[in-house]
Image (cartoon, rainbow over all chains, first blue to last red; front, side, top):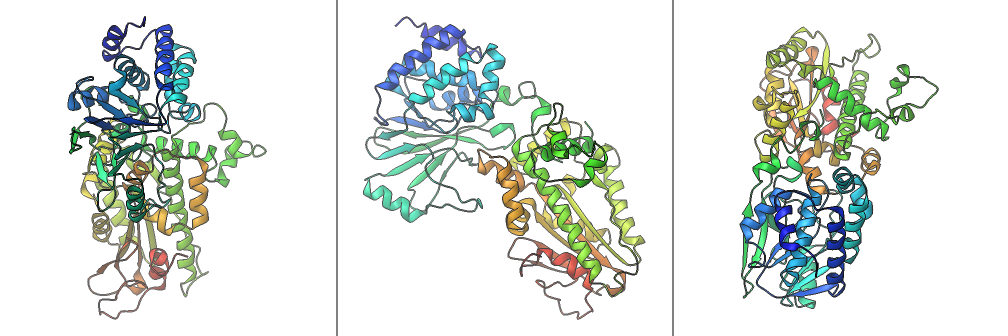
Length: 267
Length: 274
């Protein structure tokens, strides 16, 4: 296929980004893979489901240390790879490399941050501009976003999907309640819905009684200030569930990585 | 970076995005140019959306206290006889890294002791330094040169109330900024703040807001209730203490209630905000 994937993976794991031309080839190749996938991509267990990463690159490495490397562990990432954290580029590049190298072991879903508009507001565009000097890298990545899968279905009974549930504006509850979720699951013969995109301090949280829907959040100490732990959700080949918790990586969250002037509080 | 500089920068950043209007800003800039336009010029401080919202909530909290103070003054029988005064002590509180705790405590107590008539105070500051978010907040704000020296001593709302009462403020109320914003701020002002900029993660926002508190105290030398203050938790999550208000039981002491105190502190009463 002409891509030096093993070397690229090693390079990115060291925290370096690819040459612009290499990134373009990588993006083009992954688009070709993604075209072949369904909007609701069927996935077979065993597999580990992950939530938001948001550019926290060293925390992503910690995630792999916690859950096991690809391909011995299969992964579904539920989007929001970029923005907010300072290393969105390396984060997304590594995930693309792993997808290209082991396509059937990696499923990448599209989060709401995988968008041209959002990434111009929340940091990915600026980071690409800073690291490459042009907007080309961002453009290549945005093209990949357009091809990302919307949902994954594990063994036909566990649905992993991008945020489709609305949170009450008061932040005190859900506009869709537990009864609706239970009915949805029953009609569609689902055991469980996995979702992300909501910060949970404990890393994961079942939203209602009956364990019908679970939020998985994989960015520890989100935005370098929330102090939360992160989680990934591991299914074995019988769909037994295990949550694996991990904490923030010291390198990612050291003051050297995170400029002191940038952490926002108000006084 | 000094705290008062940071607070001023936050205010300018929020004003530039239209969160609130400061009519006095025009006295410092060309009055012909709208202040919001001036603030949109290059070099205007910028802050993230949640910080802008937080700044706007702080401003709204102080505005609400000033409005309540005005109503409380009007409720006095001597209303109109002497002009009320509002002292803005502002964020200059936290600029000195040494003896700050003593300075603030002495200031609070001194104000209360010197009061001959009616006095009210409002305070807005960080709380809850001991949870995962709070630990990092304290460390990171300190690393920026703004140590929050008072915070460890008054981590919770009850501690803030204790602090004010210890300083001689007979009647005190405290809410966290989340409760203030979602329960007590008038809906149109809340909607205005929410609609200026979007946030991408609601959970983070709620966590953030819960680490700030709005505390208000009042005293009226002519109407001091005898006996220890009673403490009741109201449904809305506000803590009341001291002189009985509409939502708080008297505790049986049956003393005359100061209209100044009850008018000022009943902003947080369950029966509804003003």
